[in-house]
Length: 127
Image 1 (tube, rainbow, N blue to C red):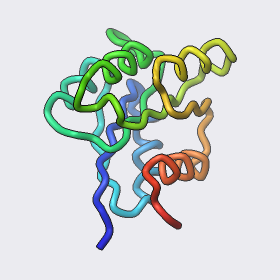
Image 2 (image 1 turned 135 degrees about the vertical axis):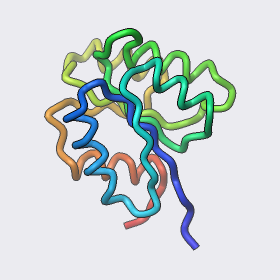
Image 3 (image 1 turned 180 degrees about the vertical axis):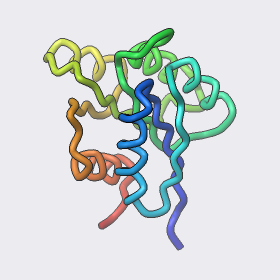
Image 4 (image 1 turned 120 degrees about the vertical axis):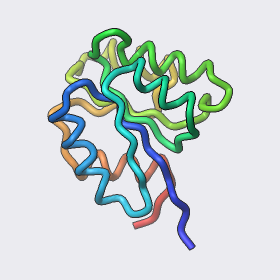
């Protein structure tokens, strides 16, 4: 019997969010919940436990780095793997995200196979 995983996708661009959800739909036993910004993401995190979080950095109200910081200080989600997906490709941004507690950093334009491979690796899903 295979486990059911739940992933939270936090992305303010509806098109980008749709692209991520579509890519993630190819991962078996993965249920995706969408949030349209960091505040919406926190609201959803308060209501349930997630196995993985994918977040953009540049979002209005609360950006992805603040979200990572908040998630890491939350007892329920402090160990939840986080993948940053962003247009920010600089080394400083990558280091800052990883220092705050992100587990992986993918720059846009995203490649579905790269996202799927990263998700499977962090959730330890075979195949």
